[in-house]
Image 1 (spheres, rainbow, N blue to C red):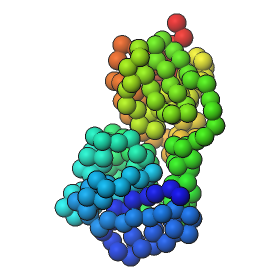
Image 2: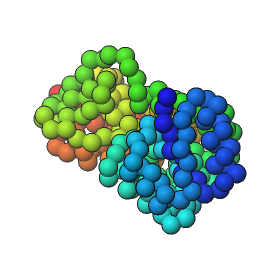
Image 3: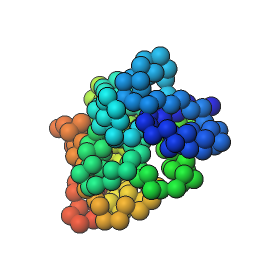
Image 4: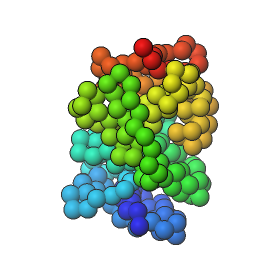
Length: 221
């Protein structure tokens, strides 16, 4: 049974989310604030963490930073704050999904199920290799010239799709639709932010070519 930590100070919303997730077959642990969440995570591992931004004691952005220093566990921000700058900050902090609380509970649960399916796929696939960069789809491990480099789930999936395309263009629209499970309209900045982070990690191995106004492709030579 997948273990989910819900960090939410609104008791009514926390209980509603816990009930929906439990009914969907997940084991749910709850925390009322960021400090409590940190204490819980010291003693228990989770398959996914859901957190609000506006939390007592430690806000959600700070909590996410602390999580990412130790783990690549999928993180979902579920919040009423949906301004562009908040969303961009969340993705810059390597969250896997940013969801508005106005979204219905069944859709939220479906998105969480999709993230968990992607992060724990069991089908054996061949590793992707290009210019000294190796992606193992079975373990989600990235190595560059034999050195392991930490990639978030979203970063791994974006790079994987670009490498699998073997020089064909991967559009921003397709990445938004496939990896975020719903249309993100024309807000390509979300994809661009992830590409920027990927390029930093690739360093001098950066082989991602921007196709202006369309998307990205891999340089094969």
